[in-house]
Image (cartoon, rainbow, N blue to C red; front, side):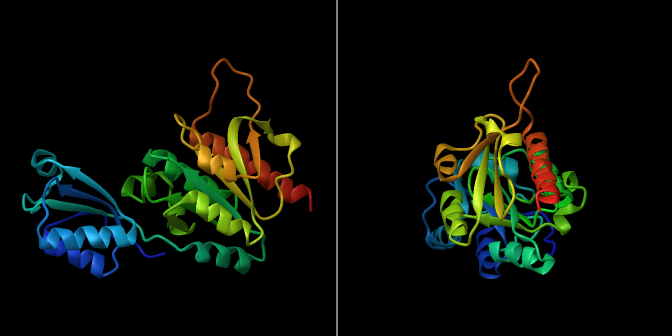
Length: 249
């Protein structure tokens, strides 16, 4: 996967050209109420590519700006290039393995995302899928937290996780969702072409995504608090999948 330098893109023409060149844009900040021609073009490009747009006041834009010449629009570019879902399947096929994919719902902490990408790599997962909205993208902080795993593990960004799960089910995959109310993971068969769905610490997996999953699984816990950090939970579940794949062939 190729690297993009992380930076903000400021100015109307600059943002338009960034879209047209195919650069991966994570998020747009636009001056609220600005409706002129170039801004309409930017909004159309953002809608076409599914980029989140936040409408903010001039004070907020001035705070974000590094050049002082934002002209009412600032884009956040991804630090690293996103893969396609097909790249993930190609990686599994190349290794002669059944697909093993992480799907992350509502992960907004870049350190958690980076740690999960690192875990995915070490567990032999073939890729990670994240949503375009309400989630952190591939920033430099994510890259650092992944300890280099971001260079080897494809990360795909999709518009709708629920629809993606439906599409992947048609390709023979099944999905297990991490939730405290599920059956203990040791009692479940976690082999085969599998997607592991992990939600954020605060909100967990959203209802719509959870309903698309085939099984709900939980980690047995004996302590005085009721939840694990999202990246730790992902690690525990991932390596139970690894264990079952090794010993249930």
